[in-house]
Structures are given as structure tokens and as C-alpha cells.
Length: 499
Image (cartoon, rainbow, N blue to C red; front, side, top):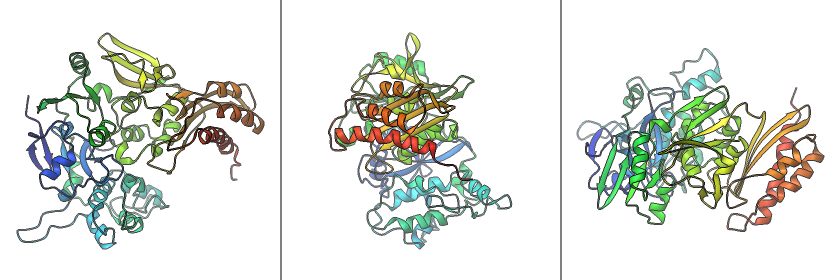
């Protein structure tokens, strides 16, 4: 097997002698690329953001921003990385490099003060700069006569610039001294990549194929199999292996809790876990697709998930996190289970004896426990069709975005002729596992969708689960928010439509 290597800013280097748990952040800094910073070591500040070449949605390659503090460098074996230093164009000997357009706008608009967070902002901003449909979308908003190659004048709002820049691309980046207005101004001022931009041209070629990796150093091993069958075989041989995809959970354990594993098994690039298929009776989503990939490939086809995605952590996290990982951890405050429970989703578990389908409502058995047997992996999530016409995802947290839920509620209701024919409600944060609000569903079904019905059902919903007191919220607050959530849904569905 070829020695593990990584390409950084166009230059290929061996990963050895880095330990398998070494993060991309530490690997880069040890090689003098100190623009990449560590702020939180949890993927919450974005100071460590770098660009990675990944399979694209609209072009062969997308430049995707990820948290270098969470990703093991061995996970990028054979891959391409660009840091903030690699964005600028080197000058002739003795001359300064030419700044990248994103760097130039940050400089002239005062987007950097102490500079600690700036390289991370620049990388996240560059990922959005190179998003293939950014300028085309702004041009469509502006009208058919606008040239997408120019900096188009679309219809901006507080979160989208006239150039099509989506500020949510920076939602995982924090700045404590400059202030966000000049950073926003820089983001809204960048134009379109020029034809001779090397990173723009790079999008037209496929990204490096995932390398089958078996990297051992200092008694620890990082394994990336080439097929699902190989992954299952390795898991039988190494039942102690820590299974990872985006490493957004395991990376925190490594950094903050100093956890180490003798063997890490990576599933993030397995082709069998990266399919998204839409059939006549169901949609199947591969467990190793990132949330960003799912969001862009579904393109609003499942409205409940379309509401969920912007509230799930930050864009930086969604660029790595997967549905399989979110379900595999079994956390009672994971954001995807309430929505998937409302959608009556099922998980497909693959093992040595074949596959089995388990309704998500039967999947969780206790705190961070499930019916998944030793040697089994989550291959996909299946969502039955047709979808309920009325759907919503409500997340109660201390911040609007990029925060952990105190309570999360997913709704999927069939309301016909003013009667609730069918109700499915998923809850997170109110029990040891994500749960269905079965009593509330029964209180709604067969009754008019009216203020009286909702008031009665809200009283039932307040009693669902066994909410606890912790530093995020009290049990009473969580119960109250459940009831308020149903009232909010009723208000949302009965608002007068402007004529």
C-alpha cells in the first residue's frame, strides 16, 4: 500500500511521522503554516478553517471549508488541502505575493484587527467565493440580462449579498475584536473568479479518489477501507475500533478529553454509504454523505430537513458531519433524530449477515444506546413517501444558530378539510433518547386543527418525556417550550396569506 501522503498548497508531503490522532491543524502548524489557528479545539470558532477538494454538486470539485482542528490528518490521505497561505499568488523573488480577492477585500474594508481569526474567515469566505452557483444565483435574482461572470446586482437581504454571497457560509467563524460589519462588507464585495484563477479552474477536474489507508504509527492505526465489505471485515477483526465519518464528535474527544484509540476506522468516503436515491415510495440517504451534500442534493425536496439544516451547528460542521454519525452517537440532543422521527424514517443496518431495516422509533434503546449490534454499521436512512404536507422543525437554544438544543421538535402533519388526519411528532432533549410524542399525536388525530384542539394537545405535549435540569435549561422550561412549540406551529399554519 502506498505511504500516506497529503497535498498542501500544491506540494505533496508524507503524513509520517505524525501520530494517527494528529489533527490537520497540528500537522500544518508543525510545518510552518501557522495561519491556521487553534481557538477552541471543538469546531466552534473557525480559526482553524482550511479548504479541501471534495466531490462537487454542480462541478466535479467543490472547495469545501472544514475545521482542521477536528479532522485527523490521516483522514486526508491522498487529498488536497489549501490554507490561507496558499490562496495568495507568490510574487517574484524579493516581492510580496498578490493577495487573493477575498484577502484583498478583507484588507481594504477593515475586516481584520488582531488577525487571529482572519485566516479562518478567509478560508470559509473563499469556499463561498468558489461556490459554482453563487454568482449565477445572484444573476437569476437580478434578471436574465445580467452577466453571471460579473459581480451581479441581485436582491440582497441581511444574510445574502448582491453578489450571491450567503453569510451562513461564515456561521462557524467567530471574531472577538474586529466586529462583523466590515467582514460582512468584504464578503458582499467579492466578485466572481476570473478565468485564469487556478482554484476556479481546479473545480473542472475531479477531486482525488479516496485512498484506501492503513496508517500505523506509535502503536495506533488509522484504517480507511475501500468498500463496505472490507469495512465490515475490519470491524469483525477489530471490534475495539472507533468508527468515524466526519470526526466532528470524535475530534472533540481527542482534543478536549485527550481520548486515544488503538484503531480508528473511517467510513466517510465509502461509495456504498454516499448514495442518495429518490424512488416512487421512499428517499434513501447514504449515511456518509455530509449534511451540506444532502442539503444541496435534495434542494428542498424534503421541507422538514430543509428547515433543519440551517439550524444544525454551523456550515463548517455541516461540511463534515453526517446523518450516520449523528444517529450513531445516540445522543438525546442530536438535531436530526426529532426531524427523522417525524418523517417516520428507518435506518438500514449492514452487517456480515446482510442488511436489516429498523424504524428509527425502535432504534434507540437507552442513553447513547441502540439496537445496532456489534459488527453492524449504519448504511443509509430511508424516508417514506409521500411526505406530510405540514412540516416544521423547532429548535429551542440560547443562540439562533450554531448552538446545542435545549429542546428540538419535528412535526409532520396531514391536515385535510381542517381535520388532523395524521400526526407525527419527534422530540429531542426531553428524555434519555429521542422519542416520538405518541400521546400528543393521539390527542391531535381525528380532531379539528383549531385553537381548542391545539391548547388541549399542548397540555399533553408538555408532559411528554422526562425532561431534566441542567446548565442549558430547567425541566420546567423544557416542558413549557414543548407546549409553546405546538402553539407556534398552529400560528404558522393559520396566518392569513397576503392578497
